[in-house]
Amino acid sequence: MVRPQIGQGVVVEVPATTANIGPGFDCLGAALALGNRFELHVIEGGGERFELIIEGPEGAHLRGGPDNLVYRSAQRVWREVGLEAVALEARVQLAVPPARGLGSSATAIVAGLIGANALVGEPLSREKLLELAIDIEGHPDNVVPSLLGGLCLTARAASHRWRVVRCEWNPLVMAVVAIPTIRLSTSEARRAMPRSIPISDAVMNLGALTLLLQGLRTGNGDLIADGMHDRIHEPYRWGLIQGGRAVREAALEAGAWGCVISGAGPSLLALASADCAEAVGEAMTSAWQGEGVSSHSAVLGVQDGGSSWAPLAEGSRPQAIAGD
Image (cartoon, rainbow, N blue to C red; front, side, top):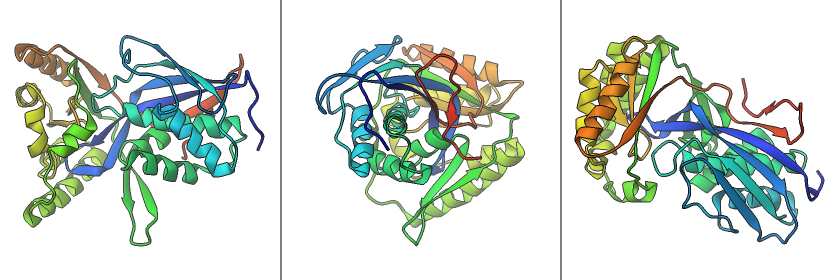
């Protein structure tokens, strides 16, 4: 473990995620083949200096400074290993739009943790980075697949350990994401939820989650269709998304097995077979346009590799962070 020097840098690539996927509230998430790229450089200045440069049409409202999520995450690593914070500059190629339900904040957390750990020789294990990421985010469903890739089910066991189960996602199942121009913060979406739910709703979700996971493993559309139903968070959040219900119906009419809120929203996730996925995306954006909301869609596969980093030097190859 060494103190990073001025001019030293790393590049971290972190995938977007879709969380909950219907009944998997706060425990189920998948990494998507879309991501942000973070170049982190050590610069002159004290431990409160963090400069942020955003490349891309989104994120003009994001700011640097010591309270930035990337920098706060980096500082957690340095505190953990007993080093004083250093000044950083982050240049971000932003492909994951903020406040859209695709894990933008998780990419910032993971990038800060991985980058800071790499700059000091990787003293912290993958398991420790996961623990820190969940603690910073407050829930595991975005940060875990963002770090590890794939479809992840994460739970705090009776032993108080976080346990991660890598689940199968059949390549015949396509993720169709419709991303509107409107934004919705996670905090606002959480405030819409009740403090308690009926036991019958919890039981229904447990059964639906079992069906969904089996459907994703086998590619069975009927199981996916019956599994993409939720009574814990979605009934309270649809009203926050302008035109959301109309977009959901359009996706189903175009052949999707199911359509749910991605994360806290407002982006929507439809699952469909490859032969109708493009039509589903077009139907979703058309329906949103009819509701007065601009949007775009993408047909995405699941990203299995997770986050990776490399030193900022020509010819270097990324070093994988994810497990097998």
